[in-house]
Image 1 (cartoon, chains in turn yellow, purple):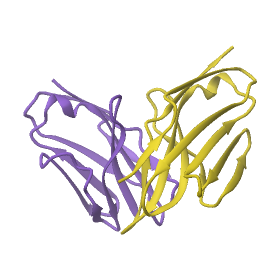
Image 2: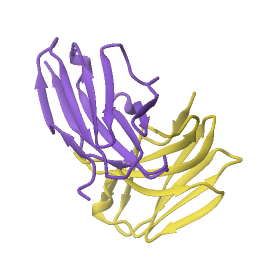
Image 3: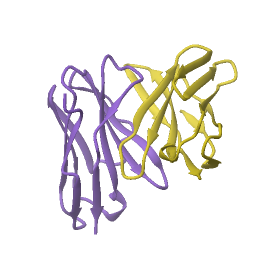
Image 4: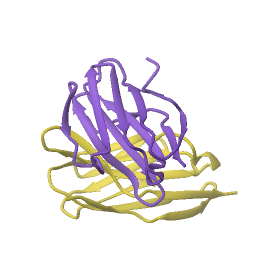
Length: 111
Length: 113
């Protein structure tokens, strides 16, 4: 089966940097995705890592180490609007590609 | 494209009634996923389709749940009979070529009383 672990909640202040870690166990692993979900909204795609290393997209970066079954999402220059839940999701391929989500990390950004 | 469209947005029903949730994926996307989200269990994958064919329904909790995709632009998730523990937000998502970027609809908030 699959399992993912990420912290349940993180608090940080505006302008700061925060890192949300994710460890996973799965078969048929292809890559790790990150999604953001605001209260009452739908999950939206942030990033995807198929290879080891860092991917940067504006203020957000995501990292993957396949040998350690570990990844993280790095959010820089935090803004109040970044308060949301962040999910890591393993992308696996077996008879088709599918995403299995972690439990999510609730990020609270304080003034 | 308007994105993934789900209906209804909210559904309140009595225990024992049949509930049908609907989804229109993004045009051209060949994968469609149904997820259920609750506080306790997070985002669970229920079933997914590739080119209208169900690929993996191992996440469907019970026989009371069924899903169909009669064509590339429409899918339904049916619960019959519904129970209070089915109360959750149900999301439909679609992706192209089964990629890691899935586009989610706004969800259907189901309450079974």
